Image (tube, rainbow over all chains, first blue to last red; front, side, top):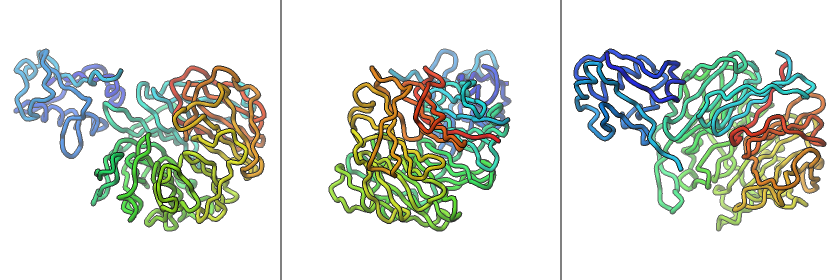
Length: 98
Length: 371
């Protein structure tokens, strides 16, 4: 199972706690993980990435294993520790404001 | 539940205020959807316990919530707002053309008769309709594809469709207003649209006879006179008595005619309310005094209403969707400010008091009278 940490606003929408787990068959990538999250929690469709293009929303970031993966290819393999469930894949609201 | 229910949208969540028909004591619940920008919360006239809330934000986009128990619990409904192809272009601030891009829902207008039918006004300007309780939204694309649409341009707040009036007599008639395109009317249920801006004068556009380009801030209608509309424009308070075919200015003796909201008394169709602010560059009330202005003559002649409102050191604004009237025998008037206060009057505006203070900046106020 892949562990996913959602930001507070999306936890409220999905009515879940901080961390959820989703089943993802290989390859484990940003795209396959987000597909699984959106399948399990369809109310999150469109909140992390564009529904049609799949493009990440501008103020959403993806972190894992202390790395910012936001600008990596959505089809790149995620770190092995995420695949093994040792580390979570994190969906983060970007630091923005003033 | 019998009583009065206020639906308040703010920059950081929604609040619901409830009272009995005396409107003396108010209970406040919220924030609902904390942290989300709630541009509008509105209730179905056909089923007052069915509420709709538009929640949006820069991070996670737009979602729509529906309650079927008067706001005790909420469920998310569809939020897939798609422009029907061809998407087309409109004017950008710099005069270039730019494709329509969905940003948020500003206003939700439920049907007067069917709780499953609801309309939503979007930025960039478009009108959506759901006929299944929000499970699916379909654009009424005849508006956005009107021949004038390539000339529409956003106002400072964005190119938003912020006002939707469903005619109380003619079920096929709809009025909408868009900043900064103007007012439009449909007489066929939203299939085709007619710009209704004749008589509007706007310093900001070169051709005063242009059919679009006017920055209409708000429209209001009394159900007993559906052909009479009142308008708060960028500058100027206007009225029409022929369903928008011709407008005339009724700003009269207002100290300034710039403002956002306008409302009509529930039982007196010639009694109207505005909250003038200083100017287009000073978006706060004049002279540090919070004054609602009332006309009992359908405009031209106005009186300031100040009893119970702060009269010094006030520099707030009242936004276009942040004023509402109830339908009790002694008409109640309510408005919310950019400073987070919600004021109410239970005597047609003669006296006021703060019902709640220090909320986040108020974006919208609606009121329901529950039997």
